[in-house]
Length: 115
Image (tube, rainbow, N blue to C red):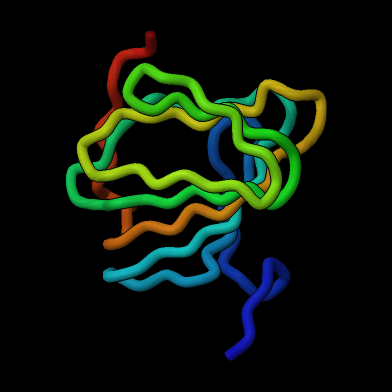
C-alpha cells in the first residue's frame, strides 16, 4: 500500500515540530519529520533502537556523542544504540528528514543532560 504524509498518522512534538508515521511496526519505524527554524529535540539515546537520519529538505545539525555534524539534502547518518544524540535546525528555513529506527524507538528513549 502506498503511503505519504497526507495518509500517515500525524503527531506534534517539541516547539511546533511535526512527525508522520510512514511505517509503524515494532520491528521497524519510518517517520518523516519537520522542524521549523530554531528548533531542537532533547539530547537522548535509545537502549535498543539503531537509527538512521536522512535529510530531505533544509540543513540539519546533529550532535552525536559530543560531536556536531552538518547534514545537507540527500545526506544521512546512522546512530547505534546507547549513543547520545540531538537533532537541531539552526537555519532560517524548515528542516525535513526521515528517521528510520530498528526496532521502533518509541518507549526506548532516555533523556540525557544538555551540554
